[in-house]
Length: 152
Image (tube, rainbow, N blue to C red):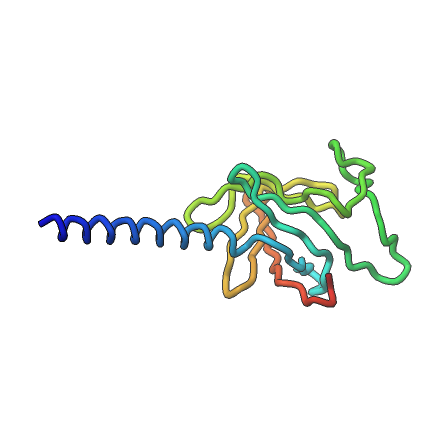
């Protein structure tokens, strides 16, 4: 009986450990660097580093893809909050999303080009991120992909 009880507890401990490990891997699969793709032009816009802080998801711009003649280090001149006049590179644009039913939501995302914050939802699909910004019942969805090594 003791042997059966020991085997049962070992099984439960293994199951709990595996569940915790898979949950952690699920959270960590979206962390790291992502190349943002403009949903209107199809061109890459930036590299954003996604990270967790106190269980919430944040993202900071670490690189911009600029066309010839564009300012390589622009500021957010259309922002109306504490970001007004701040450099876009280094700016936190994904702010405080929490995980709900397999997606990250209940936070916001900034479009530095327009200077506007939107409600946000991010989820992983086929190894890519779907990033949706909401304004009331209207929304736009971008697809973010992992950058190539030469793009970093």
